[in-house]
Every structure is written in C-alpha cells, then in structure tokens.
View 1 (cartoon, one colour):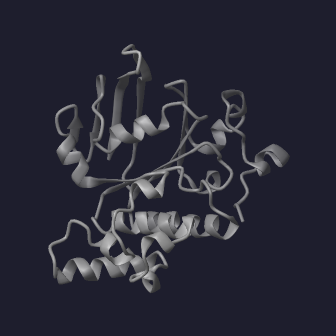
View 2 (cartoon, rainbow, N blue to C red):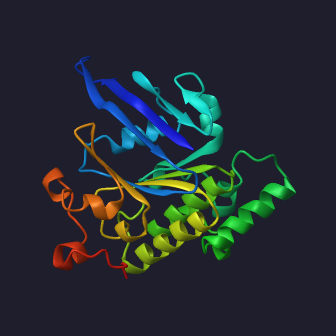
View 3 (cartoon, rainbow, N blue to C red):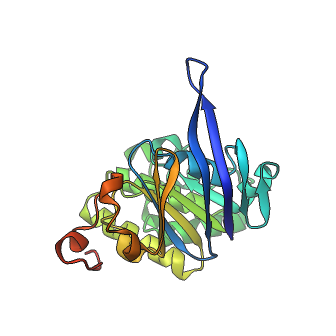
Length: 247
C-alpha cells in the first residue's frame, strides 16, 4: 500500500540555509495496517506525514502510495490520502459542524449530506450538526476533523498526534475510532511522542530521531530501545516487560 524508498527532505530556513528534515528513510506499510510513527519533538514526524499526504515533495528518493509515486503524482496521492492535523483549529473551516462536513460538496448534494451524517454518527457528533464550531470542545473538534476526512473516502488516513490534549474519556474514544477504522480496512499512520495509549493496538512501530529511521518493526521487538532514543516506553513494559492493553 505504502512504500518509502530512501526518502530525504530539505527545507529552507529563515536564514536561507537548507536543513535536512528527513534523511534516507525507507520502510513500507501494508494495506489495512495501523502503524505508529513515533519520535521526540522535531524528529521529522510531521514532515513525513506531509510527504505521505502529497503536500510536500521529496528532495530525493520517492514515496509510493496506492500505486502513485512522488515526486510526480502528488495530485493523485492527495485523492487517496487524508491528513488530520494536530491543531484542529487549522483544519476546521466551516461555521457549523454540518457546514464543515459538507465543504467542497455541491449545494444540495443528497449523497454528500448522507455520507456526512453517517460519519458524524459514527464519530459521535451527529447531535452537534447545527452547532457553531466555535462552541465545540477540543475533543469534539478533533472528531469533526476525522469525520470530515473520512467522508472523502480515503484509502489512507494520517493522524498527527491525535491523543494530544485529550482527557481519559477522549483517549478511550480515540482508541475506539482507530480500532473501528482498522476493522473497516483503512490503512492508518498515527504519529505520537507518547507510546502509552497506542502501543498495544498498533501493528508496527517506526521511530524517527533527528530525521533518520532509528527503529522499525513489531512494537514488542523495539520497546527495549525506545528510551535511549528519546521516547518513553509504555508503563506496562517498564514494569513487567509486557504490552498490556491500555485502559
């Protein structure tokens, strides 16, 4: 489903000097998998998500998503990949929940309205359709962002730090959303600096450090090394070297 081959990305700083954000990263993701993209702040996670979403173009190497390769096919990649940003306020553009879910749809499109309501119901925000987005809580805005992206029917869903700022019930809801997406066959890549609420349910772990691929593979095989790379292992692993279900 997704193949990343020797991918590097450089960006220009305010000083006009170029800096490597990613260097020679390679890994693959199977269709329907839930991959945890971990790493300390500044490790390159958000840059990699931007490349996978077709919003950025590799400086060298290539990314293949659903048969579409970047550089070259970023427009096609954007048709099959949806990205949920960490900051919901940057992504919520409608005045009400319903308006936000229907952005980009022709006025009066019955099918679009039906799909929007289906995803709103699935995410638990159907009762908020007429509510101004300014009146939503942090968690409700995040669910709105996910519902809006799912309404587009993507093959791949990218989520940037979806657990950040959520309370305990919100984390449980987010885990349920990710589990339901996986059950539906959706390929997901979830970035995080905290493995605690995600490690037990992910299929594999990619850990970035200073723009390079530091770890890749089944989660339990990597957890003994994550601390030395700047990421705290789950409490159950630290206590008993088991990956217990988070609850």
